[in-house]
Length: 182
Ligand SMILES: O=C(O)CCC(=O)C(=O)O
Ligand SMILES: [Fe+2]
Image 1 (tube, rainbow, N blue to C red):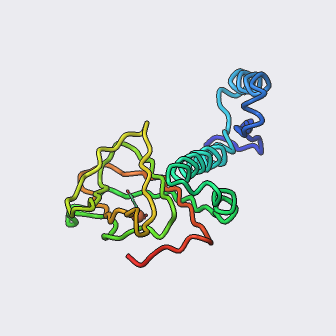
Image 2: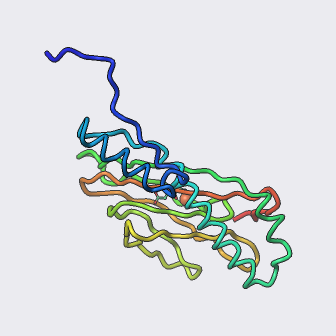
């Protein structure tokens, strides 16, 4: 059996500041590869969450502008908090036919979804028709709130087949925004 040492792999911080000052990060990566052939990448999730909050703010600003209620934008943004969830749906066992999430509507202001290639999410349109989403790792699905004018889609998840499904969910909640009963 190999004898263990207390050595650790080099750690590279993928924070925004580090990525912006590219040169240092590149040198660290080269050095890590030369000396260890490997490194531990940290702060990637934080960068991802920051990007998601930028996307959420951009969509919110555009929606608020087009509804002609820009004057509420600042107070709305101040009232926002986020929740970031990573989900893994295992492949169903042989005696299980479907695994997933029962039908519901999110209680968030906006929900942004990002996933691997395994389908499962089904959305009910305003007219009561169900759509099965075609997943794409290069796109995000944005779901809106509900009020008298905007309709949050009821959705559920049905997972079958023999592949694991991964899902990243980014929810924004507003303390000012009154989510109507759905
Ligand atoms: O896994 C999905 O596609 C969606 C999960 C979901 O709807 C939820 O967690 O609210
Ligand atoms: Fe949901």
